[in-house]
Length: 555
Image (tube, rainbow, N blue to C red; front, side, top):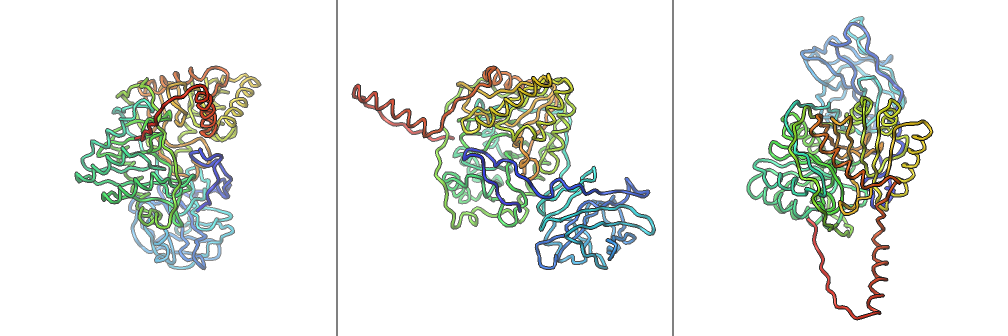
């Protein structure tokens, strides 16, 4: 498991990008012979288990239905494996030590006679049947404890063992209930309150008393409630979150946290809930500042297409059933928790939720498929791209490069970033870089910082509207960490009606941002308190004033 990275500031939702060894390996998989589309292929390798002597190493084959493995042979030039004569389909792991391998993967394990010592420093593998070579695969340095997975282009990517390889799930037709925050904090809460059978809630952090109360009441009336969160968020677990999770566990809600020695992602960072036969997908955390509508600009959608809902169920089950998921009671032992203050702002409802038709909905998850899917969407843009993000790693970030490529094709590009004080400096630098590039290359790119005024406190949304008929929203920040190492969940919604809703919100936020790289001018709490203190002191010197304190509790 990769070590945790330090955040840029204590207010960052996630750490910034970091270099990851092996993530861009040039090794390739090659398919040869006559079985390019119908025969088995080498899908993944695990040459370097943590166990002594590399016990449990294996090779994953992807095979068509009703494939009999007995006629195949896997060689490395020195040794060979001959799989058992069994009929299989899908993905299977070949191993000479199946007992050890079954502790490392949930893929079906097939015993193989013979011996191959997969070299940690690199290997070339050949899969054959008789005298025919079916596939070859090559890798170089194999990181300890990681799985090398070959994508459709033949490139290998090393990930923590156990990471999933889910395809994009797509559904045609139907509707979505589009909403934004802080305008409509009731949408997600209403969905949870209306549950009859099941609630699967996934998040990064959890600090909403109102959502917690709704989950407890659902459990009391017999709803199966499960909560899955990140076990090691950047700023640690707050006292508020600990109290709420204690209460949920006491109410017989299943609460599990991901991470620890068996964690397979750097961070579990999605924000979604499956409620009966509906799914709520958001850009915001389950806390007052996010879903509570007390601070952040966020985007969300409620969908009920069966394929999307079940795709989220499968994602939740894959994560919750992995051995890196630990019960809250086990996680909290010996822990200390940080003190935090809940956001308690009040904002107008400028945009009501709307139920809108959708031509097609896609479920994207990272690190499995979201990176490629987002780049493809941007590369296919022909008219316009509107981006809203808290921050972007820099001008070389993968999605931003695709956005600049689009501008070079003549696509009108607008990039709106947060002007909150803790990201203002870095975001202003990026805005200037983009403006310089626009002027130097005569590109149709505009970029600015948000100035939310009274509409919200800060930008936390992660969204993009493409060509006025496609929108992507979800938990994915525009940084390499999110794309390659985190569990993230997004929706891609296609259709003019749904895109028009979010573009309308973007237009309002963009207009409020002004034309000069405007800033929200938010100050650190300490500075605000100091200034307020000086003002109060001046007033008290002038005249005696009686005043009381009213402390609110966020939702």
